[in-house]
Image 1 (tube, rainbow, N blue to C red):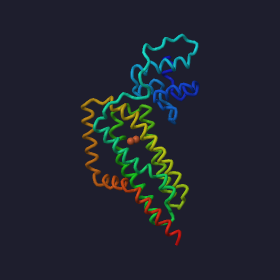
Image 2 (image 1 turned 120 degrees about the vertical axis):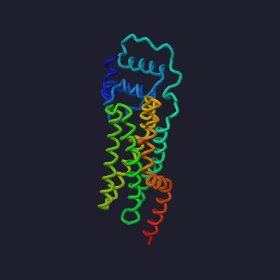
Image 3 (image 1 turned 135 degrees about the vertical axis):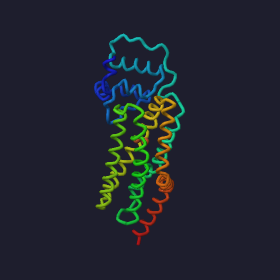
Image 4 (image 1 turned 180 degrees about the vertical axis):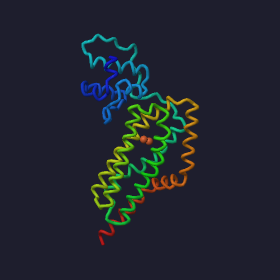
Length: 271
Ligand SMILES: [Fe+2]
Ligand SMILES: [Fe+2]
């Protein structure tokens, strides 16, 4: 079992596909993660299962992998599966979760923005660039840099999950660069496909951070580290006050702007 626990999750799932189904029963959703280099034991550890859940999960995996072994079942079955132990987030982590809410306001609008905006008009182009400006200023420069320059240094920076998050940030930047390039050459499909890919990636990325990464880091923080991180976040927020306020206002009104632009485009096509 020790050997199995030290195997990369991707290898485990390739050899024993049913282990993926068992993990999903406990809310461990690594089956869809594209990285797969995390070790099975780290994957289980990071999801913070209760002692009972952990024992039951290990028993089920061992039974799946070694069906002929005589394995003793855990003493008591887990009362509730798939629900990490609830714990109130620390203040700095709560700030990051709140920023995700703002980011998702815009991300959720991206499919309709990409589909309906006429990029052959100056106003349509500007609307796309306003969304790009929000993504670059708020989601990336402000939020992702808080994670990269501060948060991620409060845990093992080389760990697979942090490396996976950094890779997501880079991939997201690539989609936005490609969307802007497509806009410059009036390639509507290029704009649309890259923005939609960005929205899909960010939605999954934020879910992983909210549900797995942030609680995992939060559990490791000492009160002193929490206070120190909060001060560092305050410093970043102090420097970016005006830009952040502008971005938050844009996220709050982007839906109306998209509808208004669609109406203008519809009228001009009629004419
Ligand atoms: Fe992130
Ligand atoms: Fe984030």
